[in-house]
Length: 257
Length: 97
Length: 176
Image (tube, rainbow over the protein chains, first blue to last red):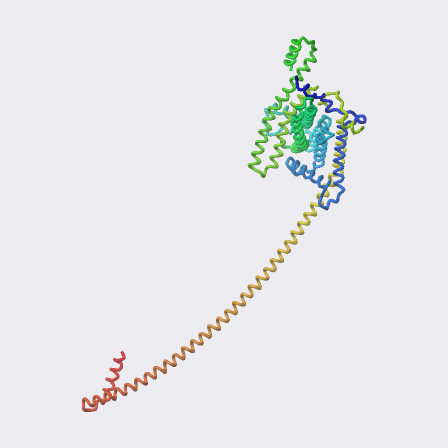
C-alpha cells in the first residue's frame, strides 16, 4: 500500500499548473498579469508625478521615490558609478516589471508568477542582450567593442586561442541564456514547491484515515514558510536581474575589461 | 541516459511486458530526472555556502564596506546559482518533455 | 465567469513547459515596451525633476539656515568683542585710578615721613642743646665744688683752668 492510496495525493500534469486557457483569443492569465503589472507600474508613477513635489512625499509619490532611490543608490551607484545614472528609467522599468510579474506567485487566488513561463524572461534577456551590445558598439565603435570583447587586453597572445572562444560563448550566448533561465527557473521552482506543499496538505486534510488529518498541519506550516520565502525570492530575482543588466551595460560601455 | 534506457528495457523485458523503445526511453529519462537535479545542486550548494560565509566574514571585518560586499555577494550567488538552475531545467526537461 | 476562468481554468495538454509561448512572449514584450516608453519619456523625468526641486528647496533652506546661524554667530562675536573692549577700558580706568591713589598715598606718606623726620631732628637738636646746657651747668658746679674742695685740701686756691680741665677729663672719661 503506497501513499497515493492512503491519501488522495496525485501530482497533476505540469502543464496543468502552468498553462492557462485563453479568456479572449491569445490572452490568458499570464498575459493578463503582465499587462496588469505594466498598468500598475504606470499607475503608481502617474499618481506620483501628479502630486505636488514640494510637500513631503507620501503615498504613491513616497513609494515611487523610494524605488528610484533604491535603483540609484543600491544598484547603479554600486555597479556603474555616477556615469550610469542616465540608465535609471530603463533599470527602474525592468525592476518594477519583473517584480510585479513575480509577485502574483504569492498573492492568494492568483498564485501564478508570470515569469514562471519562459515568454517574459526570454524577451527581457533578449532585450538586455540587444541593449548592452548596442551600448558597447555606440561607446567603443563596432571594431573597438568586438576587439575588447574578443581579445581582452592584458592576456598573453598565445592564450587568445583559449580565451577568445570562451569570451564569445560567455558574452553572446551564456549571458542572455543565464539571465533568462535564472529568473524563469527560480520562479518555476518556487511555484512548483508551493503547489507540491499545497497539494500535500490538502490531501492530508482530506485523508480517509482520520489519524492523518492533524499531520496536514506540517506541510501547511511549510507552505506558509515557503510563501514568505517566495516573497523574498520575487524581490531578489528582480534585484539580481536589474543588477546584472547594469553590470553588463557597464562592462560594454567601458573599454577596460 | 542510454545505459539507463537499456536498464529500463531489460527490466521491462524481464517483466514480460512488450515495451516500445520510445516509452522505455521516457521511463528512463523520468527516472534519471531526479538524479540530474540532485547532482547539479551539489556544487552550487557548496559554492553558495562559501560565498555567503566569506561575505559575512568580510562584512564583520569591515562593516563600512557592507554595501559593496552585499552587491558583489549577490552577483556571485547569481552566477553560482545559475548552474543549479540549469540542473533544475534539465530535471523539468527530462521529467515532462 | 470571467474571473473563475482566469483563476481556475487550466489546460493539461501543451508543449514543453520550458519553451516560450509566443502569445505570452509578445504580450509581455508589448506591455513592457509600453511601460518602458511611458516611464522613459514622461514619468521618471517628471518625478525625478520633482525630487530635484524638493531637494534643492531643502538644500536652499539648509543654506539659509546656515547663513542665519552664521550671521547670529557674527553678531554674538561682535557683541562679545565690544564687551571685552568695554571691560578692558574699565580695567584700565580702575588701574589708572588705583595708580593715582597709590601715588598720592605715597606722596603723603613721604611728606609725613619728612615731617616726622624734621620734628625728630628738631627734638634731637633741642635735646642735644639741653643736654649740652645741663652738662655745662654740671661742669661749672663740679668745677666750683672741686675748686673749693681743692682749696680746702690744699689751703690755696687751685688754678681754675687746671680744675676745669680735670673736671672735663673726668666727666668725659666718666661718660665714656
